[in-house]
Length: 92
Image (cartoon, rainbow, N blue to C red; front, side, top):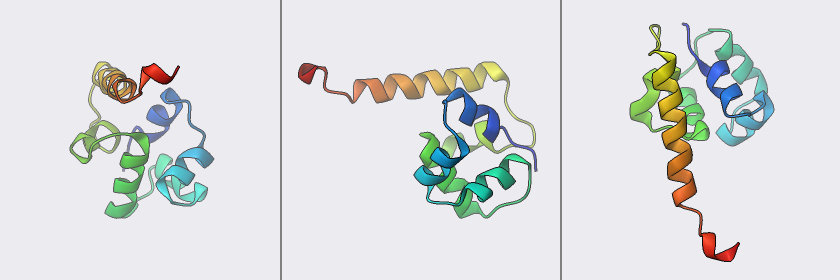
């Protein structure tokens, strides 16, 4: 099972340990998934949520035929924009 987990994680500047903590899984699990070993659907869900993706965006990370890099960059940029809108700038 090929995936783009490592690429996405690195673009978000997350270590395996950080992602594992956010997802509530073991760092070894992240390592195995990045190496293409199979994992449970629930584990994929946890990882997607920890990365800030919607479940409907699962093909960006978990797909045997990943979308073009341009689409990955767009998804990551739009996620950052959404997160920045949620921040109350008045307290800064």
